Length: 119
Image (cartoon, rainbow, N blue to C red; front, side, top):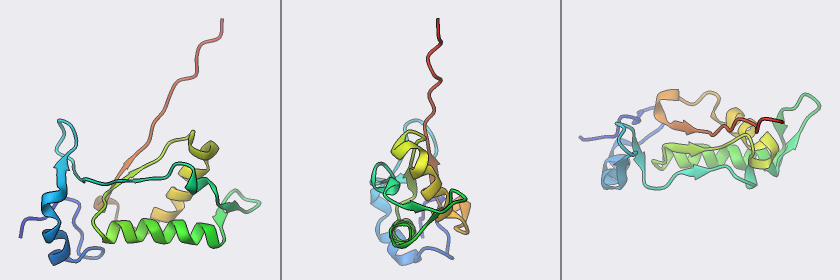
């Protein structure tokens, strides 16, 4: 059975992922096989409550965490975030949501921009 390199039997159903095989492509000139749809964290991952220690919690967090896990089970293996998404909250939410998931089962993309030099 031809499966993407991110396949993990603890997370995925082999028959399901195999049936989606045609929807995986290489990312640019890399050998990273990504599903044609990724999960971006953008604004919605910032709509989560944080406790006094800066940790995401509550119903809105649970919805986002369940979304990440379901996306992974459904074959989505590319998660996108950035420090500017929701003023950094999106990265924290995604970071907590992926804790405990097999790291080799997904790709994590973020961005960074050096601040402009002051004159």
